[in-house]
Image (cartoon, rainbow, N blue to C red; front, side):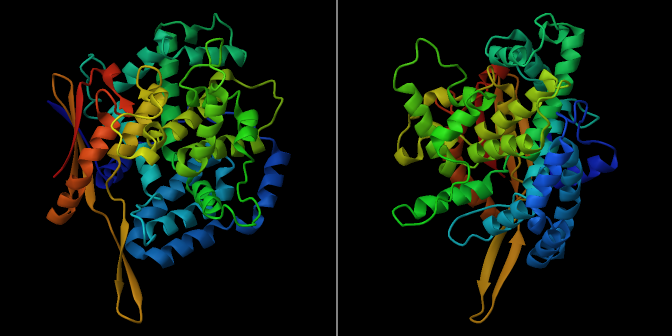
Length: 447
């Protein structure tokens, strides 16, 4: 049996040893138009006060949480200047929304300020190991990064990636489209970078989801439309040619076999996903914010660089589509409502890695405990989980062990895991199909 462990302390020690640095072989992914960038920044000038936002987090959460948060957010912001230039203009609102989510009284919420950068660490360690031990060797005889490159270069389930590159102008004879040392080297670097981008920004959509929920709650009241990204039909028109909608349609294009009702079904899924997921609005926001500052037309555009943004957006969307796959309105059902949305490692290794990463990264995610003395309310930030361990046996069994900080937290976590385990990892119906790695079953346990 082999294993791989993850924790905040391991991440901090790894940074001191020179590990887990953001990969940036391809970065930046497009040429920024300086005029558009300035105008976009001017339109956000009143909200673009990062020092104020960080100071407010410190005042709201206390010194201990802030000391964990600030270094990671500073690194994320430094990275985003190259990978996601427009991010700095919305970071204050994102951080405010993350804090509001943590202190939501009526719904269990966890931190996202620490969570997203730590997902970047989990991705890098899962793909490359820790500098001493390599990545886990799966039953197919490959580490997960090599397995991802294998799936890409087979061009079976991933043929849509090749089609995208060709539509963006890549020559069919380009060596990266044909299995060999050059292609494998390029795709290894590409995959690490795309996975890191998607991991660090995968929860970007929470503020948009909040706006969508608020609009839903105000239906029937004479209020202005709060949805900023137009109607689902307009969204489909604006983004219908992007890789995002290809995934939304079950990773296949509209063709002669499509029923006449299919387009309406996709529009309906688009509408539901805007308010019932944070992945779909996050992916739209990620693409739109990049589009706002990108120079176009631009003769220097690289199809591979563009793919990094487009595929990362797909992973941002797909990491949170399990509720749409199952359809939360039929919560008692044991059969998914939209089976074509099932996430498969064979056809989308990138989104599969990000979805698995999101499940692994449960450690050091503070929640808020309230206490009320009658006149004053106090908040205490504490996390239930100290680390996660992946264990892989020789016959394809994968175990996710959550190291809880107390017996009470362990018991609470253990109660929630059976339903989550079934909905995500059930071999027949689970949202995430890992059989392409030789995984036969997945267990989630709290210790």
